[in-house]
Amino acid sequence: GTRLLPEGLDSSSFLGGLKMQAINNPSRVASGVASFIFVAGLNLLVHAHAQNHVGPEHNPTRNWPIPCRAQHSEKQKIGHMKSHKHVNGCSPTPGGVCDRFLIDDFVDAKEVATLLQIAEKGMSKGSKSVLGPTIMDVNSGWVLNAGAYQPRSIYAKGPVFSEEEYSTYRHVTERLKQSIETHFGLTALFFTAPTFITREASDAEGSWKPKTLHDEYWHPHVDKNNTEHYDYSGLVYLSTSGFDFEGGSLQFFDDPSQLDCSAMDPLAVEPPVEPGPCEVVGRPSLEIEPRAGRAVVFGSGPENPHRVTRVTKGTRFVLSFWFTCDARREMKSFLDGKMHVRFGENIDHEL
Image 1 (spheres, one colour):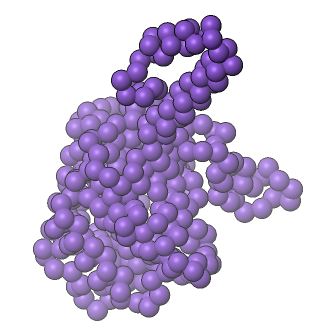
Image 2: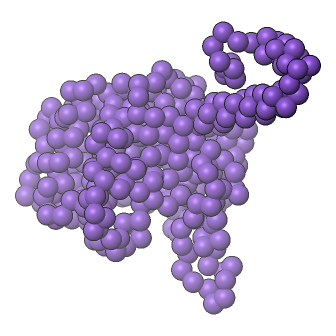
Image 3: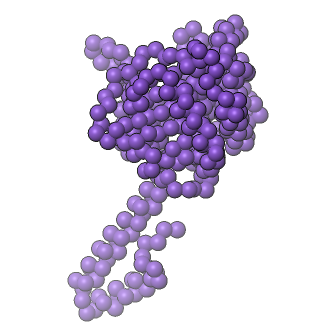
């Protein structure tokens, strides 16, 4: 438990001492009781903060139990896409396991260096500015820079990465999939598109300003609301909070009162407007600071609304992966340079 009194002093000794003093100095006793209450309350607050905050220091594997909430209806359509089917032994069900869990040293220093090399090599082809968010899909070669409305291809003039770099990326993905299957006890799980390396950068002066909604990466969201076939989400960090950058922590929100999502409903205001992002109005339920090599996994559904806080200084790198229970949406030809074309064609044909 949490220590509420100084080392070597238990509650019975403390209260016994107060009893003896009550005869000689009642006012001092009142002061002592007030101090005891204050210290106890402060320690409880510190303990609660420790339970809900993970810093960049090394941690043992940690798990936060989260029950699944109702997922999207199987009959629901999003645009022209049909909802993927419920798969026994894999698909999240209300009240089931949609935990958040953390593994430090999931990738080693050599793998981190190789993945950073991939990010820097690919993202260097195009925009000269490194400020703001940049996302790169290593598989398709598409890169979207801050302020851009359309991605550009880094593969237009041929291969960019070595086989060793592709192999490292692939092995990290496979290990993450195995960890998710083991933790959640899944009988079937499939790696799906897209997958990103994201860079978020800021200078100390704060000179960069967002130009598009994509640039405002710090808004809360639910992964499954963005891409309906996502069932499990995985993050692998390539940089460390407080060393490589400031800000940029991962926050989760369990209570609806922590978020104001009225802007998500364009009909809630007059006249109707374009949907906007949720805004944070309360303290997060859990905050995790990145550490190079750290992996964080969680259910992709509405039980895990989350966000990244704005990077205020330095550069933050993270890999983002998603997994599905729907075999039709499996990325079957990973890192062959042509997968995304076939992925779209296969889904349209099968649905």
